[in-house]
Image (cartoon, rainbow, N blue to C red; front, top):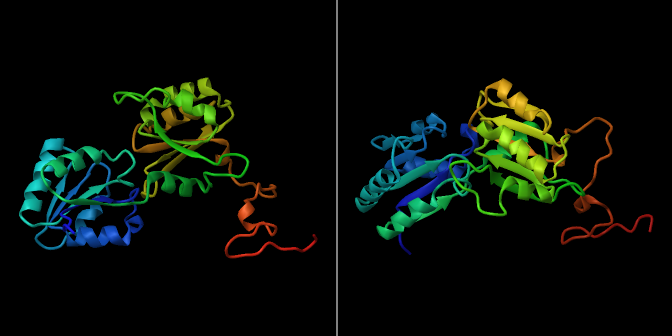
Length: 263
């Protein structure tokens, strides 16, 4: 089995204690740490071992990043390519992996906590709710990066699922317009979480009828996630919850037999 030279590492949404144990171990071991300094917590640099080279990638082109990683790998060094959140979600890692593969450099991917998970935690919501939403769609608004046909927000809205809209805070009016066009009601809960898990985390709550105005008033333009859907309604005291079948006494599974009480 070929030894891995480059690790694409998910650093999580921001808080250092949301970095996984595997991620921390590999970052501490790396000879070159190439991290997305515009998004990743700069404290990542404090994990570097003595003599390790730490570089921010925000000012680099793809060719420059690949050149740095390839040079280090060919010299027998370990590279930690650190991305925000989970690298598999809008991480732009495929193009890096293609270039590394062409150069004969081995790599592996280390998952991280995504901002959608941190945002849900900040809102204290469950993104899936029985009889309301059993699907979560990760998506983005079309801007400079085109969106394939049938994946535009207006099309995705037809599912009535919980939507997590990435990279679109600056386009919030467009997001709202497309979701309303696609069938969401104006009163559908819409929440925006800025820098989830960071000390400066900010939450803007509303519905599709007023969230755009609230976001504009907050000044949030980037590093925020837009969440939309009926599952986002906050827990209210005394409410009757739609319960999962998993814990219902009549539901059996591999670890519990169904109760016959009352039958």
